[in-house]
Amino acid sequence: MIDLRSDTVTKPSKGMLDAMMSAPVGDDVFGEDPTVNKLQDYAAELFGKQAAIFCASGTQTNQIAINLHVQPGGEVICHYESHVFKYEGGGIAKNSGASTRTVGGSRGRIHVAELEPWMNPPNDVHYPLTQLVSIEDTSNRGGGAIYDFDEIKNIRTFCNSKGLPLHLDGARVCNALVENNIDMQEYGSQFDSISVCLSKGLGAPVGSLLLGDIDFIERARRVRKVFGGGMRQAGYIAAAGLYALEHNIQRLKKDHDHAKRIEAQLHKMEWVEDVLPVETNIVVCILKDHGRVQEFVSKFEHNGILIMPFGKGMLRMVTHLDISESDTNKLCEAIATM
Ligand SMILES: *Cc1c(COP(=O)(O)O)cnc(C)c1O
Image (cartoon, rainbow, N blue to C red; front, side, top):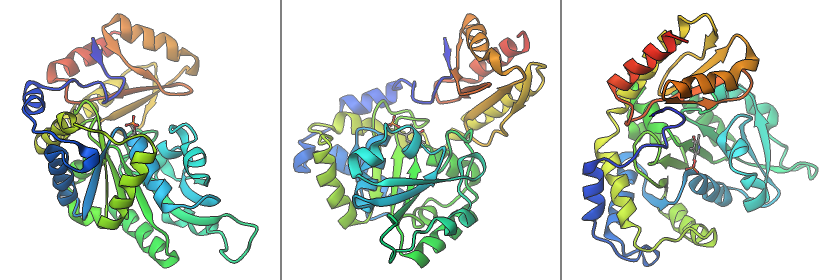
């Protein structure tokens, strides 16, 4: 089966497995796992942040960050299609007692002009206190769309003018940075906190990192424990994450090339109404007949290809490091026959 449902489906390579098997480990709740510490230091340096903490998932890193940035009764501004709002089980309300002000913007990205109208007046007791802006780069629901770096800088400037922290849900941030050749440290300096998934296109089996300054990450360590996320000999899985950061960042470009070939093939098909312009590793295809999503998911499956229904009239295909050139050829050939 060629599995394009998500970039989370990758299995560790031989090199990654070897790194895992030979990792030195210790009790990470005591801060004594050398491999976890190495991964955290490596990632912090990569993005030019002071510190990092290794967590179980991207939901956990996002939720810890939000919990630290807001107080109960406060408000988070995020896009209405963002993962933190839509796909984390209501965690902002449940874990942090905060409300969300969702805003629009093309393909999952907030335009800085969308922010000003939703700044609640801090001296009027009717309103929740606006306490955080959270953005997602690349945007999943936006079909892997990348933020214009100037837009991010404008959002940062705006947040500074309001005294607001800025969080990045960077589940696929490396896809964005590699594709647009952006300096990782300059990029990192725009955010108070950054969540990075190791288990997406980077190919590790488990884990995400939360990055920030030393004080923030120390406080994150407490929240992670309270959320039940303190791990012991986590070095075995941290080794996979370290291997992923050391070996699998630049190769993300290949996934983008494969996705662009799939896009081109889909455009040739009469049953396709449109494809969201492919920028990274996510292909979102809109069918002419919106009622045929399940039918096409089954058609692909009969051809040995797994894809994801993605809402009304839409199919999602995600490329990743277990999708080879020849898989991409096979996929394009299969699409051509449908
Ligand atoms: C996958 C993903 C996450 C985190 O998901 P987990 O499954 O909890 O690791 C967060 N944000 C975005 C945009 C994602 O795609």
